[in-house]
Amino acid sequence: GDVQDQHQPKKIEALAGHRVVASSVGCAHSLAITGDGALWSWGAGCPLGQGDRDTQLLPKRIDGMGRVIAVSAGTWHSLAITADGAVWS
Image 1 (cartoon, rainbow, N blue to C red):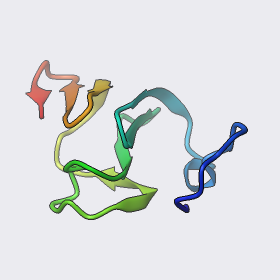
Image 2: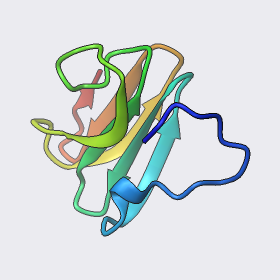
Image 3: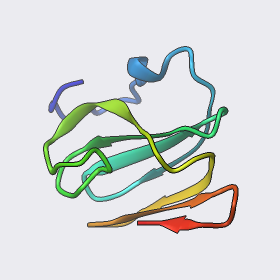
């Protein structure tokens, strides 16, 4: 990953080999759910579920929630819904 502006679509190589089934984009962060129910986050400007506020240039898996089935990224927050019906922030 890098911090360069992108003027054309760019494949997220760090997710190659994973089947992405859903994604959501906030102001400066992105989220993706893969076919196995894993949630991945990357970007800047808000907590990314990684235990800190550091900028994460490459997608990193968020552990500990179980199978994620839906996700929504806002300007400064994100929500995930897991298969058991729990909502995570």
